[in-house]
Image (cartoon, rainbow, N blue to C red; front, side, top):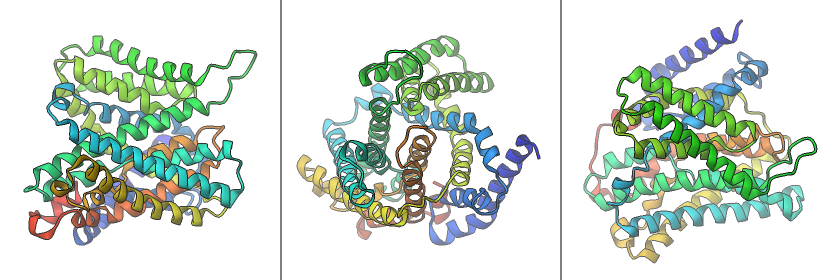
Length: 405
């Protein structure tokens, strides 16, 4: 069976599974969409049914790189400066402190866990630990959208959650991008190895040059098909170039999204195309992420359990501490960080990005932890949202619209 027919069957199966079986579960149990596609990929993958072989997964490597890069561009498109400047500084301070504290605590604890379980030396255990710190920082935008619909009377909390989810994504991408620069393998041949700073400049340059060049192509274009082709070309070029030099496509394409949304007069059309294509790419990426999963042979169940518990405690604790430091805890409530516990596709993309690099340490462990954490938190994220707001302040909306958020 050809790869094209296989992909069509996969997408068709995903569509039917989501809209027939999992849609019923989402309505009844309030599950944020996404976890079902990971499960479907695992069931179709070579480790379970074998309907998607390892060769098919490898053949769609460039497509997965595009999907990863598209996520970065969508997040970058939310960084429209005039809108950002209208938000109070304390909101950014609280969101940034929550993100940094959560990532740092999880990375530090997971470094100790790796040293304890695998006996890794200190200079090596930092790399997978920081990767998991970036995974832990990421929050699900769809879960926050559910929160925005439910918390209509609490505008302070709603704005804080929206800013915090974007801040989480940006800091997670920046942390993982810098990690790929610092832990970069030396290039083959008699070539001087660039320093981590030079690798960072290369990654930023790919995004900046790509955004500037494709701004000229996009101009004031408002035709959806032409915008789509141009955006696919820009993101494919940038993500492919970043992946070729073994850097994170997320960091480069985030810059492309931010540049295009701030320099183009047709920013609303660009944003519409980016968001419109995001969900199909997101679902197919989750399917292939599940299919690419290989259970580690090295005590991965214990690492998953520890990461899951540590992330929940760190996320809630860092959110409460950051709000207390900023003096906004009474307005946000002590449990506002629970709405950020859902992880979504960005965490899976970071785990998948880490796994496909040849020089990654414990790639299957990090990837397994990432997708299992995404699976569990997506299943529970809507219930976490409920716990983030006192019942007296909650405005109920139909469950159908929440489950599709």
